[in-house]
Amino acid sequence: MNIRLEIVTRENWEKAIKLGVSRNQLNYVPSVAVSLAKIYIKPDGEDVEYIPFAIYDDEKMVGFIMHAFEENTTNSFWINGFLIDKKHQRKGYGKLSFAEMVNWIENKHPQCNEIRLTVHKDNKSAMNLYKQYGFNPNGVFFGEEEVWYYTVKR
Figure (spheres, rainbow, N blue to C red):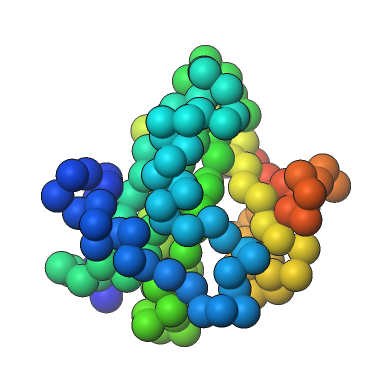
């Protein structure tokens, strides 16, 4: 596998919004279209910036992940909207893509000392992935989703 993250642009957005999860996962993650709308709507506040990425294996788009952050902080660096398309799940893309995103955040933001994400309370497979990478729940919930955090080791 040759995993890479590529920013969603006018050249690939239409392909990205066709990505989706299986029916039983629909409550776990927003659609790519909803994630892309957040860039314009800014539901998390005016200071939050969003960078949407398509996940590729060579030339094949297999998923989506978005990074949200507040530049002048040390702990407001988030992973949002992470999904591997239903046709490409259970092939190892999730683990590799997630590691790529965490590494990208660590390299892009040297001031970052904590990365956060939310996970639906019933999404056991995502929780297992996040635990393997060193993320832990912090007990804060937004509706059905709990905030998890990872302490960056520098």
